[in-house]
Length: 140
Image (cartoon, rainbow, N blue to C red; front, side, top):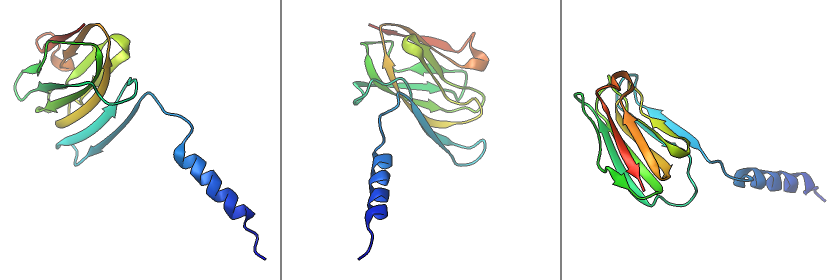
């Protein structure tokens, strides 16, 4: 007769490890194609779980332009997609609740974030040119 106990314990342990024992409030991953070339990445930060309640779009470059598609939104969880079109700029979004996400100055491409927005004023800037490239988003 074969002993199946060690194999059974291994399968049970592997199942527990694969399913995990809880979630994390933040995670990130990214994928670079080549240094200095287009970069596509996804970052999640400060989410409250569940699907996003809305979408926001931001852009920076190719010139000295930075913008968001909305100026006022209701509080909630949003998917923020940023189109970074210049390797001399970044799109840095910060505000209440610890929201602090950004693209890289040296990279370009599209980056997506999930952000949990609370009532208040959020800012978006290009860090190297913050005095002239900036804006705000009001959350009610």
